Length: 156
Image (tube, rainbow, N blue to C red):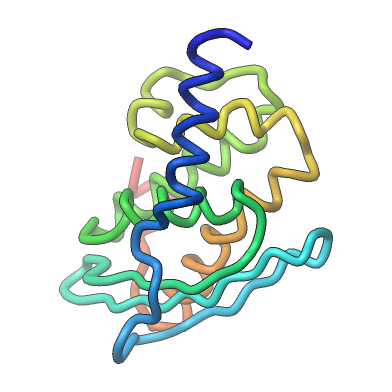
């Protein structure tokens, strides 16, 4: 394992142990409960949207270190972000997770910050679902909240 792989593995382990944003959100605009039936990972995510921004995200979950770390990192990326940024980040993370380890543009990795640690996870299709679980919950909660999300073309 090279030094970058070790660093990325440590980032995932750190976030799985110290889960940022964990805890139910008081008075969310919407919530989403998602389960990965393949492995049993699950998350209940609440979101509050104000003035075109994700004002708050809170979550409770259980599962493997990949799913829990991914949700923690997602929280850091989207909490307080404008909706166009959230749409772009979700698209970037999805692109990364479906790259199958072939790599993605450095700009995507830079935008994803600690999320870039999941580049190695993309090589394992069964683990991709774990990493995407929180993002699916976020998309669902935002849709349920009635937030008007910019189209992908508008957010690029």
